[in-house]
Image 1 (cartoon, rainbow, N blue to C red):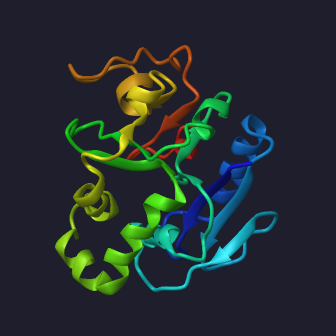
Image 2: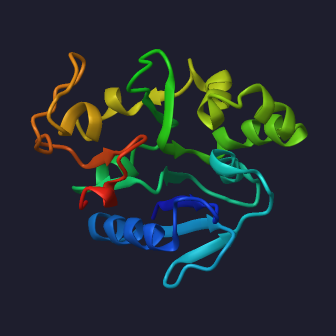
Length: 206
């Protein structure tokens, strides 16, 4: 049974209902999942683990690497939409991140398979001086920090499971730019749709 995690830092645009939404979609398509949320508030009907630090915004995701969180985990951002069976994604059993949609040479942390053995070295580096790293990567955020260690190490979802994880902007909406391929429909075989930036899925009825 895989543990599926999300993170909610209250006070911003993400709300408890977005955690509930994601949990419902995950459990529909991966019924045996152990769904949990790292957060600083209670969320009715969801197993929660308190955030232990005051790291703001996207930096709250670094708490996924805390040593007391055991086992391999599958992480998803709250604006992820699940549209198909997650069995392949949940069983990939190796460090996996997305190839960044706009920077193909970089990483995107919207959905990550994080083996416990891979998380420990990251926490060791991060926990010694988090403020230093937050300042150094204030523009690129957590994924820029993770690129420092995993750029040449992590497998890319797009290579492991071609077509199963897609971008709403690049692969679903009607193409607006030359590097987009969408026609307004979810591509056949897609299981997860990533919403990076605006709009959020609930803003367009997803």
